[in-house]
Length: 142
Image 1 (cartoon, one colour):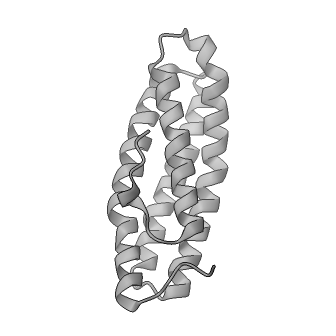
Image 2: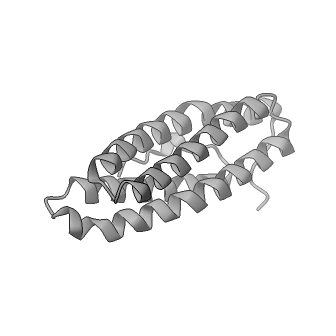
């Protein structure tokens, strides 16, 4: 798994969602890299694509709500990054359906998804944690 504890931002809900995203993307990449025929991969690919279309929106909404709650100054910039990723996922899903479930599109999608997830969580989301720590805002209500 590509998850590392250094990606934790200290907000249980957001950290759990990040871990779930990493799990799903890791599984997706492993399925695509398997030696199975494409026809054997399609169900898992379709499931992952449907999951991503819903889950990234939910996760981004929760993350943005936390940013509003702590007064994060770069919320709008962060939201734009999120919106661009949502649009990318939607565009890929549409192209995948229109082009007839092509494997090469999913291979490119998996690569971009993996790189984006690591870079976003390791860099952009860590800025939120740094800001919260500087403000001494705790994400733990428990």
